[in-house]
Amino acid sequence: MARVIKIDNSLKKRFSYKKQKKNTKKDLVAYFLIVCEGEKTEPNYFRSFPKKVGKIVYDIEFDGGGISTLKVVEKAIELRDKSKQKYDRVWAVFDKDSFKSNSFNSAILKANSNNIQCAWSNEAFELWYLLHFHNRTTAMNREDYKQALEVAINSKIKSKRTQFKYEKNNPNMFLILQKYGDQKQAINWARKLNENFDGKKFSEFNPATQVFKLVEELNGKSEVLNDEIEDKYTLGK
Image 1 (cartoon, one colour):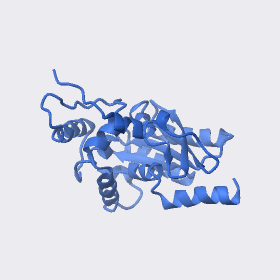
Image 2: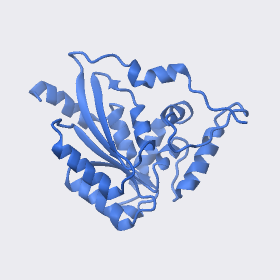
Image 3: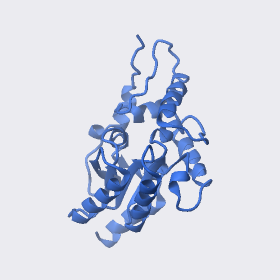
């Protein structure tokens, strides 16, 4: 029987929320609301990012799960408008998957018109994972992504006794990708994929993913967000 991939303790400590330093007076807090279509896959991944990058502390709320593309956006709007917390970013995370093209396109257009950021993927969130290893430029279905991801990660594992088997709700995917993949390259390839498409027929943008935009913000690499947070504390909330 193949052994389960083990994650180095150093990686776990580095990216664990529980190991982060407590907030200080000099910290700048960025308030995020992330509403996901999936119940565990996406929340597990985004929860694994460092809670603090530089002076910015990320206070992130998650909601959603088991709802359609349009419902994700509608719930994000509802939660934002009802909340006493003023969020710096509200994100809707969903896939094209088997949803109808009209529903997928409508969800993105509604998000855009309501100032909701969209980390959508066509066809599946797993495209973002695969881009850590390959510049995928042709369409695939969810099962193909799963198989391609297993091949890519297993090719990086030196021990033949330890084999990676993709499980959709694996809480260690962020750490596995950090260990065997290249997130910086994934961002570059995802950005280049977007350059191939134009217009509002988002369902035809395949393969494509906007997840890299949310990843850049959580990595503290978004100059726009960083400037907004700095201004918020300089000028007053």
